[in-house]
Image (cartoon, rainbow, N blue to C red):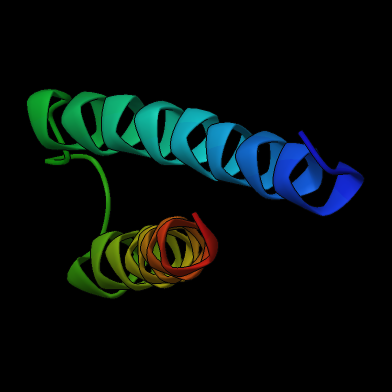
Length: 67
C-alpha cells in the first residue's frame, strides 16, 4: 500500500471518528432540557454544532472519494 493510500485511510478514519463524536454530541444536545436557556442560546448552540457536523461530513465524503 502506498503512503498516499495509507494517508487517505487514516484521514477517512479520523473524519469518521470526528463524525461519530459529533453525532453523540448532537444526541446529547437534543436529549438535554434546554428550558433554562434562551431561544438565542439554543439556536446558537445548534448552529455551531451543525456547522461542525457539516464540516466532518464533508471530510468523510472527501476521504471516501480518494479511496
